[in-house]
Length: 216
Image 1 (tube, rainbow, N blue to C red):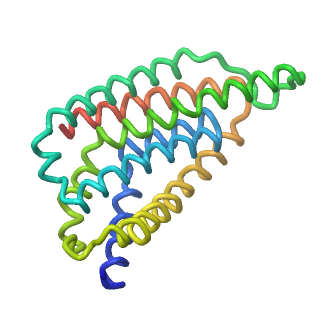
Image 2: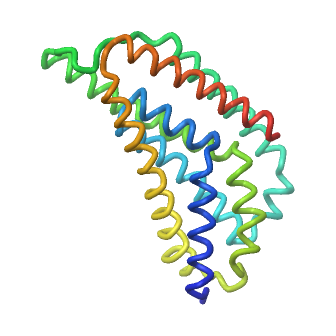
């Protein structure tokens, strides 16, 4: 059984690693600013799933397997970079209108339908960003074994301790960024402000992609 002190050290190290701005946080904030809290948490879910993938790799001794299939992670990373650039292009060319613009019932229904169908794509984009981001790769596959004695981690410890703890830390840190971004979004509700927000989000997406290229 892992000692409480080790778990606290893991939680603190993970919180610091997540809070440091990187491609994941940049994408999270950009999605929240342009799509609201719902889109932000959809992106968070994808990012968190990616973290759990790497956590599982480390816990079950798959770091060696990952190193043997490094080419797969390289492909995922470059696909993520291209996808971020594509999102940036979409944000830059998006149409804009005031958030407070009145809508009839049919328009509201259409918007809700579009939001529901887009959630899966946002989750997938978050997952790809994490899988292609070198920061979580380094943390879970290189630094985690230095923080926890992985030989003491059983399946039950992974499932009922590490996974819930990881999700909790990611949720708390992610929520801070999502709620902060959502506050900014609602303060800037005009069509002109929306155009600026989308342009900023576009630059942020491309900047996140560039960061991933530089860290290659």
